[in-house]
Structures are given as C-alpha cells and as structure tokens.
Image (cartoon, rainbow, N blue to C red):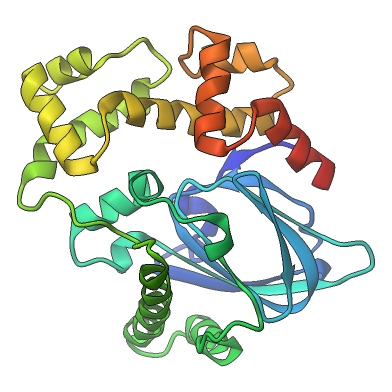
Length: 297
C-alpha cells in the first residue's frame, strides 16, 4: 500500500473556482477501494449511507456501517476499504479549518497541533448509528445537495449546517473532557512563532535544536522557549518528535525500508529512541503499526 499526501488541487473539481468546502459521494461502483493510506490538512467528515466497510485512522481500525459518522482531523493518516461482498457508500464533507474559525490562530493550531495539545481518544472520532446525535443523513444530504446545485450564496447555508455539526460534536467532546481547542495564549503571541513552525515543518529531518530555530527566527533562546511553551502548552522537543513520528508514520506505509532507515530519514539518530517515541505517540511499535494496516488491507 502506498501512502500519499492529498493537496488542495486533488479536490478542486472546478477549473475556475475553489470553494471553502467540498462534498461528494464515494461508492464501491467507483472502483476506489481499497483507498490507499493518505493525509491532508482538511477536516473530513464521513457519513455512511449504505453497506459496511473498514476505516483505518492513525493505526486504529473502525467498522464503518450505514448511519455511522467518522471524523478525520488534519494530518490524520487514513485508509478505507470494504468487506468482502458488501457495498459501501458514504457522503464526504471535506473543508479547510479556516472556514470554521474566526481566528486565523485557532485555525493554525487546529491544523498543526490540535491533537497534540488536546488529543481526542479514538472512540470519540466515531459516532455510532445508535448514538443520540441529531446531525443525521438529512443534514448530510442537505449539504451535499447544496454543493451539487450551488444556489446563490450556498456557502452561507452550508456553513450553518457545518457549524451546527461542530457545535454538537464539540459539546459532546467537552462533556467527556476532550475539548476541540484549549484556551491558549491570546494577542499577537503566535505571530513571532509562526516562522518557527514553518521552519520545523521544512527541516524536521535535520539535526535542529530549539537554539538553532530561535536563531533562524531572530529570537533569543529564552524568549523562543517561553513563547513556544506558552502558545502550545508543550516543549519544542515534544513538538519536534511529534512532527518526526507523524512523518515516519507516512513513510512506513509508503516504503519497504527498515524501521532504522525510516527513523534516520525523519531525523532520529538512535533506533531505540525512535521506537520509544513512536510508541509514546501511536501506542504501538512501528512494526505493529505496519502489520495492523497491511493485514487489514
């Protein structure tokens, strides 16, 4: 199975216009299953309208059947297949977090390290058909029909449906103690640190340190460290390891290289430390992760 990054162009079905969200139906008749492991910066909501299948998200396996809702976050590595002799059809709503949040800062946090700051357990990504959740097929169908027909200012009405969904979902998560976003630093704190995140994303595979990133951003080490922890709630090293493990996860699905080789590729110089960090973030070893996904597909 080859993993891949799904960029904005891959869901831009119009040659002349881009939209704040996309909605379409995937089915077995389209000959798209098994769908290879991939990831993107979009929020993705799946609603099963027919059949039975399996969805793997970050190494966790979900049974996905008619009436179920599945929530996929930015950067989640996910893959989809069907069970033998079962059809599978589902509505896909795919949107940029910028559409949901008034604050660019909240959107940036959501796309880049939301799961690291306030991780949501796997069981709360999947809403079973039997759950008491009022966002049902009618709502998904309304969003799909709006996108299909595109009446005047359809984005406004569609956004109201989606905000309703996120309101219900976030309320449910908050009751369980897993808020979508935590209360973080306010004001312009993020402005000085954004270049650091960009630099980390581009150079995570190199032997970078908090000192070298601070120097790149023309900030003192002490100021950079304080601001990074203030904004994210975590240390620079914790975030760097998260980035490296996230990238390693994709390579494990895309290559036949050894665990040691992949660890070096993403910036780890010690294999045992790489495995330890992988288990910390993914709750399993790299080999177990690959076995889980490939055995199911």
